[in-house]
Image 1: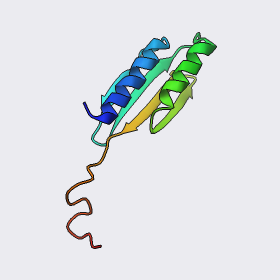
Image 2 (image 1 turned 120 degrees about the vertical axis):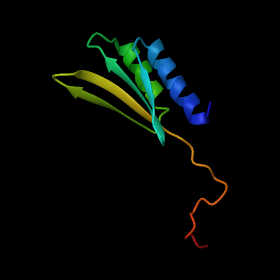
Image 3 (image 1 turned 30 degrees about the horizontal axis):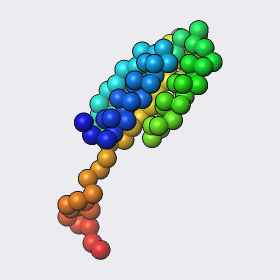
Amino acid sequence: MSASGVTAAAIAARLSAAGLRPRMEEHTRFTTVEAEVPDTLSADSWRAALDAVADADRFGLVATSLNGRTLWAVVRKTVPTTGDVGGPSYQR
């Protein structure tokens, strides 16, 4: 598992420990972790959830009157640093 995969899995595990049900989704350049946040979540669980997503590259909370609250985090996948990174037209 890549370093970004380990980070995303750790965030998901910590959200689960905070009482949430996280779901992960792999994308080409990043991995997302999302969890629905119930109205009954305690202050201590909120702190634990926010501490967990703080390890992500980006995170936020979507709150709507129709769908409730979703806490999300994005962990970018690492880009290889060797080879022809600049592409064929890259000049130094």
